[in-house]
Length: 363
Image 1: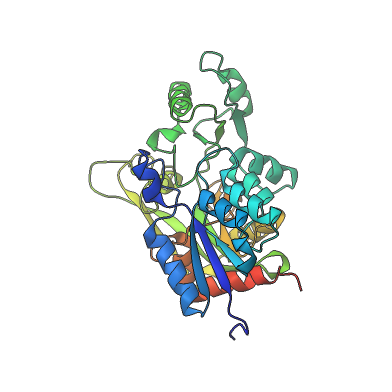
Image 2 (image 1 turned 90 degrees about the horizontal axis):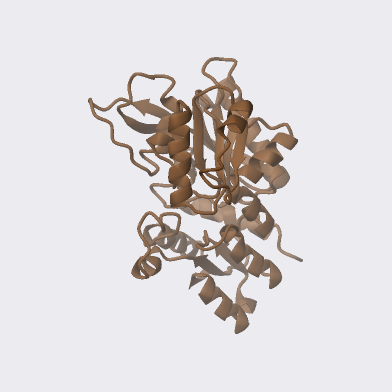
């Protein structure tokens, strides 16, 4: 079924190269879109018959809105992660809401909430959706005044997991994030306070069970599971080197408990088959993911990342993170990979996202 009216779609994104040219490092811009991500989205929209305008960054968007160019846009396809500020992912949605321009993915409120992992966990706890017990270390708290006794009273057993509260793409996460004692915990907190000054730090109980990412499309009652992907441990030789990224890095940490004496390897993923989706644990993860997606008013497409609290049939899926604006790199990002292996090609995924957003269009 094709849309009866073809659209004028503005694609808003930050360009990694622009920030690299300003002197920022590759690690600092890794959350931002790059041509390998933006170009296939534009190509898919054109293939669907739409007219596309590129808007490379919030400054360009502000200028376009000031010139009333937004009046000709039927839809903004939002790929903006933002770069500055604690609500950076909410900045473009907030502007578009003010100008009453229809856009894909979460509202400004959803984006601001889900970017903050501590706030996300507080809301999850309030609504009785499982998430690991945690402690927040506030950004203004100095290393000298750090009260490890308070952390120990809330999280009495090791290991614990330590990460910045408002970063994505594994930023701030490395092999030291899993702390097995007080000295390791203090060192990691001190490192994060240096790397991310002023940002809250999240310390939570380490979850040793299965690590599953659920991809979803739709909004509210129309939400459905596209598929699920599980991260697995793969032993690689005698050495161990920690990497960040989607193919290696933070995803291996869920498997340390399974092979506690083998700190060699990397994460590999498997997309769960149609038969595997019948697994009671996978079904439990998907049910929790859908409830979480609806709770935060996420829209159109994205992911919920979960990890079970322990191995075995009694394990409970705990929400790690909500991704209301997930990566869309065609052959690399988890959402399109899961969709493809579930039978939905990339152009079809983009079409589903557009159609979901259009359901919010005013008559």
